[in-house]
Length: 482
Ligand code: GBH
Image (cartoon, rainbow, N blue to C red):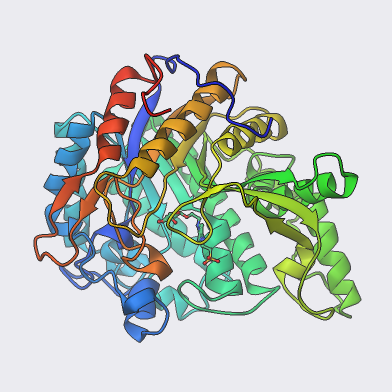
């Protein structure tokens, strides 16, 4: 049903995980401290012309120095877990295992120990978009040589932190960093090679993920006893006209070209979705190419990749209405032409502070149900969900509503629909560097004053609302504003 329905007063299962999420480049700052190497976001920001206001992550929230304050904020929220990412360039300044930087390892040791001291469990993402520049100089993710480098880096992380970190994620949102990084060029490294590089990058990323999962499984799991998955992002899609066969097909195409692109090989039947392979192959043929621009995995690769997960991390923010179409030119060679679906919005939907973000709480419930149906109900952590503003609001009533309503839909999916949801992470703990939008869009439960050298943090109303949800493990009563 395309509506929120009645508010559900109920609680989550006893062992449900509550947390907040951040990412290294977005919060750490200290871009050149203690031996850290340069990464693609350092380069992209310093180049200028790519980010609103030419903002950079040079200082960001200065969490490299202020992490004890972040830990205190987490403790005050009452969450059991903190999802953060490791900066590859801090650990391996030139990207490869020939350059281990002990000072970088020390930083994450301090952070992890401070978390555990506060009884908060680390949930660690190995890669949240900040590729070491020297590896981009080799071609970046479209170059399959990166598989070995990623696995080397993962090994150093498991060896250094795996005694205390029990929850791992290989990648954050490959759809975004392959697409925005190599197809559209809106994100670092700013490459616009439509219809090819993002597809190639996706092969490297999926192989890197699988090989890292096997590494953990073969060499670390028995001793360290942790778990490892991947975080994928997806909007919820629905047919624009629920009664139109063409729109229903478009909904399926949207799904397969977004979540399916990365999920099908790992969580699904194996390989890229047949629909995606067929569509890209057909377009490639039309374009006179002898080979498809998206190369399928071999049978051996399919077997090696399939099932390489302990859980799915899901980042979700918003919803789209799918209908067939492509507004570009006949001869275009690109992802959007391959997909040939327009993804629209409903004028009735409330908007947030980001161009792309519409507040559609029921979308999360539907997406969780889609995942349950399509991938045999895997364990899912909602590893990001949240809402932006451009008003610098401390009394952020919209964000309060967003969390209450999206979490209530998560509760319905969990309790009423039987979706295997294990935890929920709010994006984000603090306002931070919002990629191409710089500091103009804020997602934090805590306000950060970016003009203050101390980067003072202030709890917003949403921090209080989230604290209550966490404390009640759901909703003991309907919130007054709902
Ligand atoms: C997440 O991406 C990221 O993991 C996180 O780092 C980020 O801060 C957070 O969301 C909030 O954005 O207008 O064409 O440039 C969510 C997926 C990817 C959705 C970028 C919006 C912008 C598309 N987002 N996308 S475009």
